[in-house]
Image 1 (cartoon, rainbow, N blue to C red):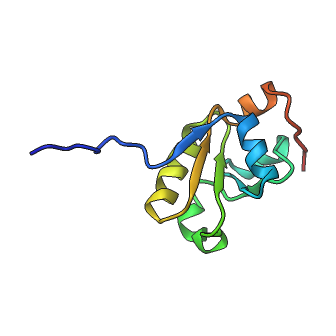
Image 2 (image 1 turned 180 degrees about the horizontal axis):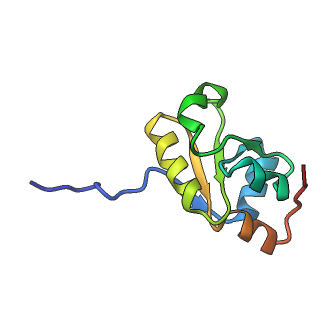
Length: 111
C-alpha cells in the first residue's frame, strides 16, 4: 500500500522578515510559548496561547485570517501549525522562532 503524502507538510514555513510583512498585511501572529517566555520578549502584535492550552482555545482564533505561529526556536510552532492545519485554519510557521526574529532585528516588547 502506497503512503504518498504521508509526510507532506500541511503548512508553509517563512522567515521572520516575511512574517512581519504578512502581519503588516493583516495576518495574525500567534505565540505558542509559555507566559514566562512571552514576558521576556515578544513581537508587538503577538497573541499568546501556549501550545498546551491551544486545543482548548481554538475558538479564539479566526478561520478567515492567516495565522502565523511562532515559538522560541520553531519546534513548538511547527507542532501548533500541524494542529491548526488539521483543524482547517490558514496557518504558516515562522522558521527559527523568536531567536530568529531577534537576530533579524525585528521589534520586540516586554510585558
